[in-house]
Image (cartoon, rainbow, N blue to C red; front, side):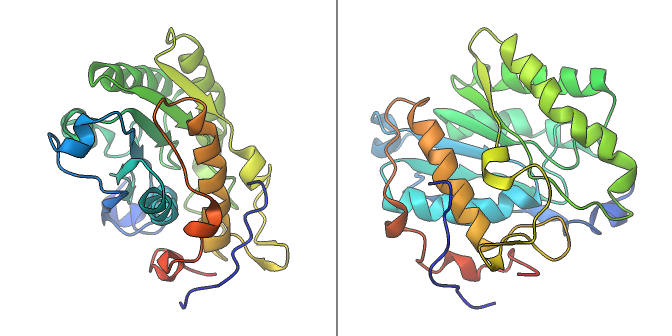
Length: 257
């Protein structure tokens, strides 16, 4: 797709089954000079944001990386297509590498966009979220849970909607019990409480009912950075006009827009 100018910001299992929702693979996006650990930039007081999540987060990362490039913070995404989850299908395999990835990134804050694959019982979800809080704390960072956007479930997601609907309350309970190690941001201000394909006459969510479009990625980025500015010392974001229309909206992860 071509770049869409004038993005509206508004509020400034089996592996084959997983590929039905997101293609399998790892997507790493860096922005704002996310230099290797030990560089002079990361040794300074400049904040670094590490972003985790699923294919929705991969798309959001395109706008976040552009905003980091225009602002004064470092950004790295290890969001993953085909999962990115800390509980549910293939989570055990992901946990084998996740602590090392978080530690090596040396983040100031880790943002976890709750994954649409965080399936499991309430007890399993709570245990996984506690584990993530402690893993991030061990790396010297704070964890920020961000609620997932509402979806219009297809046959793939429908059996797991109860699990997905529960994630917000579980993450909030874990954050409240974390003694300041974690917090939860409710992104309903960005997405609304129900899937909405168009907003202000423009595509906002993918026609597949799951993914996002550049307009909503930009709105999410502006909202998230405003929230993080109040939570993370040293994080300075740039005005949306400096990053919203810089070409990232042509990325292949924006489908059905």
